[in-house]
Image 1 (tube, one colour):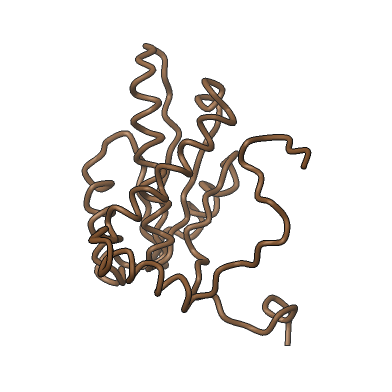
Image 2 (cartoon, rainbow, N blue to C red):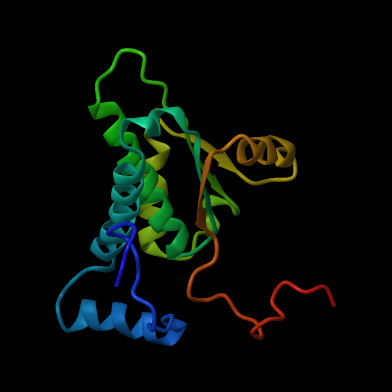
Length: 172
């Protein structure tokens, strides 16, 4: 198989369903004692690693926004932004401009999982990451933040996305 990058996924694999993902996570925790927080940390750090590998120091020229929903997919994206912040800060260049933002599409009190809540609490303490919480007063600001982004991390849709194949985004 001819692959352009080491991040390619071999064809023939089916996506993991929501119930399969829950089973994997629950088995990881109950059988192997791997905490879900660690699983989220691994997922988010791999997203950051991929972007760092892909863009190297040119990452500094990009504005990156994580748009996060209530669940663990949003938590994964928060972890990724946190790791990207660490990478950029570690480059230790005097003119480093950090263009990282996290947008959550709910009140922090409405985050669904303990892991997502924990990562929001960490992000909230980091001065290197801009934080926006969706409400009726800042929709235009959030739209602008997304429009100016070069890279958008989808932390909204995860394994719980529901709909009939081919009809999910059709107007009815």
